[in-house]
Length: 89
Image (cartoon, rainbow, N blue to C red):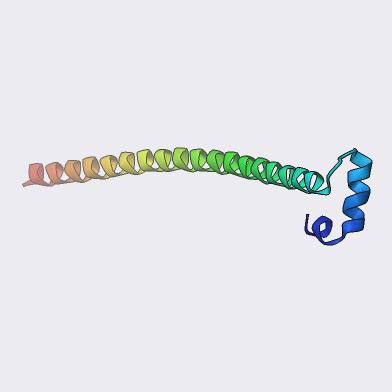
């Protein structure tokens, strides 16, 4: 885009090749193509990051569930130990 705006010869050649009557319309067209490409790139990146967030959230849920299960097992086993010690007395 910068090359097209700096070198008038290339801009004239591309305008004649495309069939544009004004050089500015060719410049704006390439600017629009550039912006659409940037938007498409960011859309793809956001989709990828959304999938990563979903996967990480699922993993966190699984780990939290396993942690809660282990805590319940530990509290149950400590409760069983306390009751057996009381029975011995």
